[in-house]
Image 1 (cartoon, one colour):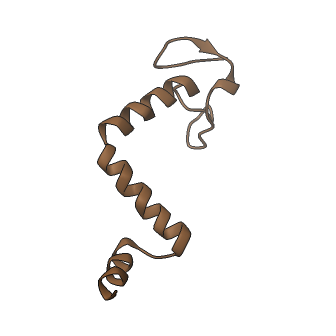
Image 2: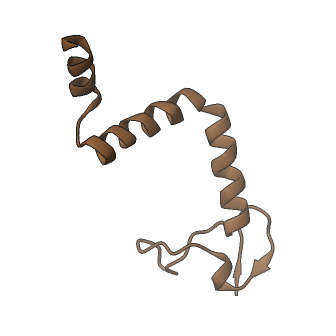
Length: 76
């Protein structure tokens, strides 16, 4: 059992994500509170999320950076 730092509830360890660099091996926030925090961050940083998503899509799908994509588009 572990106490969440956000909601203050004591929950089983299965309700916490793993984190190797922590002494307990778990995050200090439960999965539910962590999800809320991440969603709020994404709402506040919408432009950054879109940019990061685009960069990772280009790298994963085509193996190129954004600059390489811009160069290819310019050559067309």
